Image (cartoon, rainbow, N blue to C red; front, side, top):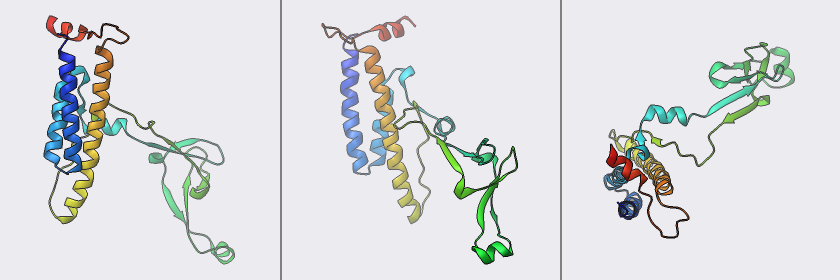
Length: 195
C-alpha cells in the first residue's frame, strides 16, 4: 500500500516529461496520450473532467457597464450598443462621425461608450477548474491546419496544467506532511479497498 503513491509520482514525472517534449515537437497524438495517462493515474475524485459546457460556464468573463447618471450596473448582454449620428449643428461644429452609445435599462439615459465605466469580472489567473474543454478537431485545409496547431497547443498546455494541479492536490492530500518517518498516508487506498 505504501508504495502506491511513489509509483504514481514516478509515472507522473515520466508522462509529464514526455508530454512536454511531445508538445514542443508538435506530436499531438503522443502529447494527448500522455495527458490521458496522467489523468488515468489519479483516483476518480482527482480526475480532470472533459466537459466544454461546464468549462465555458466556469471560464466566462462577465463585462459590466455602469450608467453615468444613475450608476446602475448592467451586463453587456443586456444592452444594445448602436451608432448615434450627430445632428446638422453638431456635425458642423464638431465632427460628422457617429458615436457609439447605449441606453441605460433603468433610467433610459444615453451613455457614450467612450465615457462609460467598464468592469470585468474575471477569475484570478492562474485558476484551476478541474475541468477542461474538449480538444479542438482538425477540419482540413491549409488555413485550418495553422489555426489547429495554435489551438491544440494551447489546449495541451491547459490540460497539462489542470493535470499538474490535480496531481499536486492528490500528493498533498495523501503524502504524510510533517511525518518524520516519511510514510505515505494510505487512507485513500484503504477507503478504496473497503468499497
